[in-house]
Image (cartoon, rainbow, N blue to C red):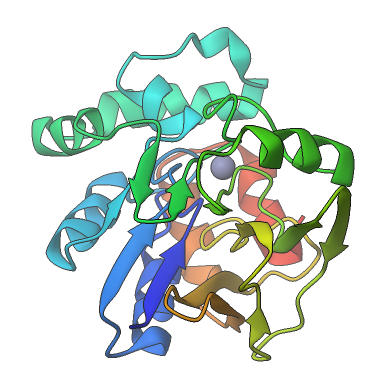
Length: 240
Ligand code: ZN
């Protein structure tokens, strides 16, 4: 079984379509939230995810877009984009987002946006934060996003190690406890502007991260036309 694991798509339909084309005939699509926010096509992204039968969890931007999280949690550009999203999403998009749980367990893998202990807010950015969350994780493995950085944290006994996975090289996590972050489809922040995602084989617990080129200029033009904040438009070109 091969599953495409996507996170932080952020209303970037051009990047999502490039990733789905790259992933081709997979058995399932799982997403880790922040489907909307920042980008210009929230309804298009939700329609495409519904079309491919994606299952997933709610992110902080998704929650804020449907009024489930205080907007004061966000920086000014993010807040402007959330307000724009609130004004532009259809009732169908709102309903699809509202039906999402904050935590979803798929056999021995837990899906969250931020972290297992604080699904909407906490950023897993260090071995120490990962270690505490791995202790609280009810399943051996977890998938999360939120930082927009592709990374794995792996626990073996008391030791937690960080793995910065190279693209296209399968990584095996069977027999260990792990937290895997596919990176961001729609707004990468690790210095590489290409869309990031991973393909997971849950039977062998093998994950392969991938990077995919997409038409960044087209998305920037759509964001300009929507009058979204300039910094959000510029950062797509740099992946930071
Ligand atoms: Zn995000």
